[in-house]
Every structure is written in structure tokens, then in C-alpha cells.
Image (tube, rainbow, N blue to C red; front, side, top):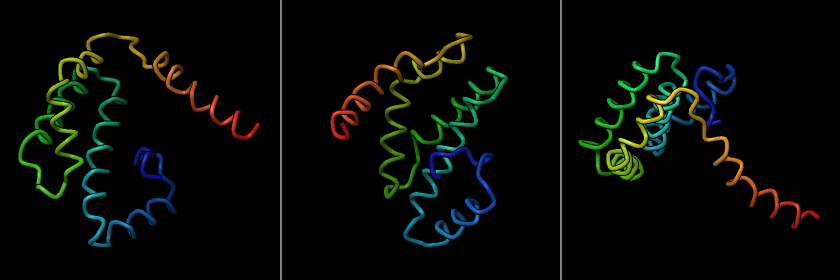
Length: 118
């Protein structure tokens, strides 16, 4: 459910997330989920220029001034800042896809699964 785009959540899923995020112990998860949703929305935006500007803004936001307890966001911000040229290049090249990478990365998963089940 946390990996689903906010606009794709059902009412029941939204209700469950609201309940989870109401718990103080989950504030880090909520903050990270919010950033994740902004990143996903940028990649889904049909206007590549606006999307690139939004992702540039997100990178700037999470690469400085993030509270210390949000260690995952601090690490993500540092990585995205270091790799910003590569990450933002996606928006400069129409038709860019990570399909081949996903195919290669998925291969070991199904191999292992078939061997374990098999």
C-alpha cells in the first residue's frame, strides 16, 4: 500500500493510511511516504519541464535541512544530490525507460522463486 500512488489508493486504503499516520511512532514513515509520493507524481507528470523542475525542488528540499530523525530521507537526499544530473536526465530524453534494467533485475527473483518452489 505504501508503494501505491496516492491517487490510486482506494477509500479503504486511504483510511488505513490515515490511521497508521495518526500514530506518533510512524511520523518518519509518513514524511518519507510524502516525499515518495511527490517523486512518483513528478515522474508521472506529462509536462517534462514541470516535472524536472518539481524533482529539482524535491532534491533541494531533502538534501538540506531534513530533521536528524529522518535518516532515510537524509541518505536519499544526499544520493539524489550527488546523482542529480543522472536522475534529471530522464526528463531530457523522451522515451526513456528502465524496462531493460527491470528485466535484468527481475531475472534472479524468478530464478530463485522457481528453484525454491520447484
